[in-house]
Image 1 (cartoon, one colour):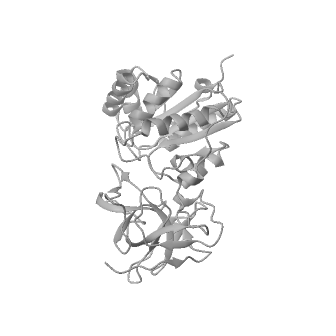
Image 2: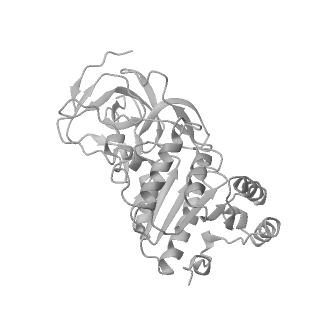
Image 3: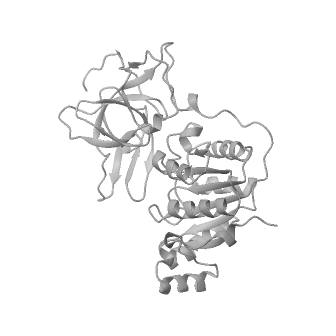
Length: 346
């Protein structure tokens, strides 16, 4: 393991979007000590490595050139489609090599990945955690949103969940957002409650008029993995309390991943406790997945009001899905009108 020395970090150091809320005050220093989940950490892409692409704090795709230093954070990922990785017991060790697990700049031990092409997946060297001029280690929690103030508002809640990652949840959520705004709900708060942080996805919500647009990083966690993590219920309770206390005409929530992973069951339990009248949009890969997800959601106290996704891609599967599930099936990717479904009650 190569020896690593403390060093001052350049003012213009590249940063993965997982550090987007971190406001460096200057005088940042890398200290060779173990890095744990959510610590702001410095990494080196080795000079002999090939270039890789990660998401910058602006949301743009940013190239890491061989020999570049950048800031990211140790974290977990359990994607069913992309990458699985973790933070080892004892944390990341200075001088050791780890893997970029997500393009937002989460780094950890690689446990496995899919055959899909990934522009971010590369080994990088962990140099240490980042301290400010006072010697305090920077963490995502330090820059999280403050505790909620005031009572819950009565804005209706719309939830988009799916049977898998990459099944069209964000596409469906944007269709719901457009319908909400066209129906007169101008102030829509958007929350990606679970999964891996993605500033690109949040910018999609911003483009269609939602604000604020939030995910786990805004509440101090790089992701909501690993599954069954300790104290996740308290985290979700805080997230929901903050969102429900904001003045808004609607709260739109997307759960990243699938219904069974990323601690989605724990989030849904908290959501049902806080807002049992939540309106649910289920995005399913096919009819069988829609049937299974409908049953799982029923066990959680939730009933989908509409189905969408690949289970509605052709007239054949759309009719089959609607007939067998007994729920309206609409293909939102084709621009089906949702205004009637999401219009405010008189």
